[in-house]
Amino acid sequence: MKAWTKYDFVPGDKVMCSDNLAGEEIGEFPSRWDLNHGNAEVAMLGDDKAINLVESGTTIKALMKGEHFRGQIE
Figure 1 (cartoon, rainbow, N blue to C red):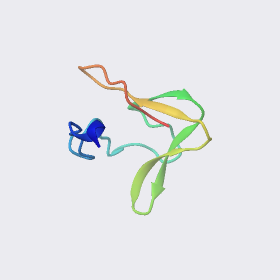
Figure 2 (cartoon, rainbow, N blue to C red; figure 1 turned 90 degrees about the vertical axis):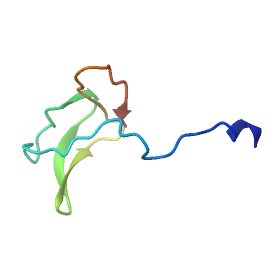
Figure 3 (cartoon, helix red, strand yellow; figure 1 turned 180 degrees about the vertical axis):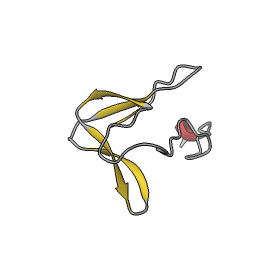
């Protein structure tokens, strides 16, 4: 338990990246993202647009202004 005593991470406490995909075309690669490997596209998930990672092993990263963002989706 000692390893967790100073652990202060709260899931969802700080938003690292957000994209509502407004203006993106279904079936196209999202314009505010960069493809590292594989294949991805904008798709509908119920009533919402979502990024569909088409192939296993696909990785993408957000194109961010200002401070460098190192996060990626796999």
